[in-house]
Image (cartoon, rainbow, N blue to C red; front, side, top):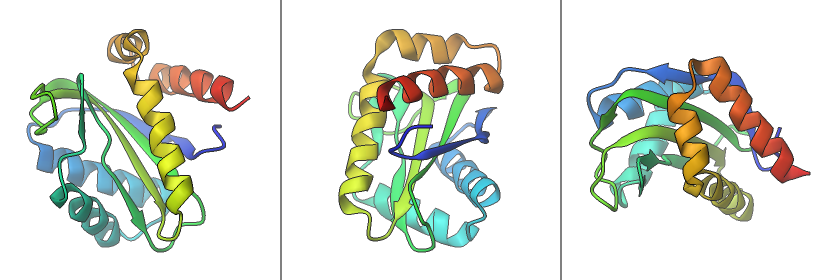
Length: 153
């Protein structure tokens, strides 16, 4: 996997959500379950960051992220939404892809590098189309790992 962060296949999901708050709650539970983190710490970190401004990146993508205690290295989760959801994105468009990132509390530069890597990946229109049209979570994970491993080489 990418040297920038770990992406566990169990953290790649296709979900149905109706609100931004539901997405953030589901994302927090996913991080807690898959990476053995305290759920309240995760949701608090993500919501604190969201208060600074929406992590709706634009072009159908949101990148909720936070730095929290208790992590050794950055970890990621990816959700494709069954239906686009309003996320207060910079361009006003609803999101259909959510790429979450959690980093150790003291991981300043590593956190920014991981965010930049996710941002580059999600700006690629063809990649976004492939992620949205992939048949299931396993196929989405395969697409992500393929690109992340290639970029890390």
